[in-house]
Length: 70
Image 1 (cartoon, rainbow, N blue to C red):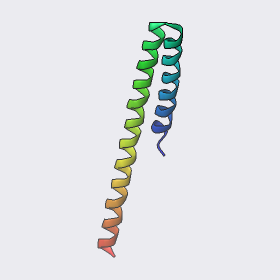
Image 2 (image 1 turned 120 degrees about the vertical axis):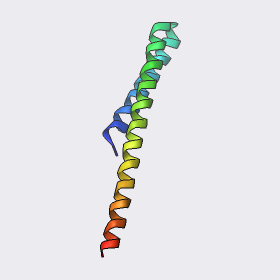
Image 3 (image 1 turned 90 degrees about the vertical axis):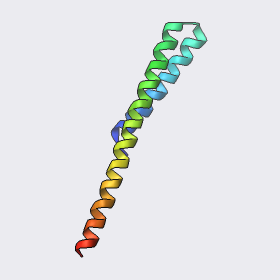
Image 4 (image 1 turned 180 degrees about the vertical axis):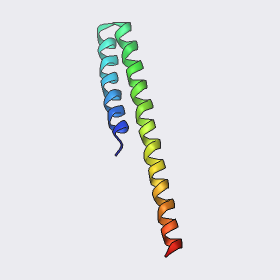
């Protein structure tokens, strides 16, 4: 698992907690910061997902090339 996926998920969770704290206290600024943090985490996790997909594709190409050589 890619480190960006892990850090992104952690950022999503932290943002969700911050957003809910802002909602509960009526603090719109905290709520907005939480939403932004959650979105940042979502983007970072997506980046990690793409990197994993590219790595899996690369591995398949390398395996196919090895099969052709053998």
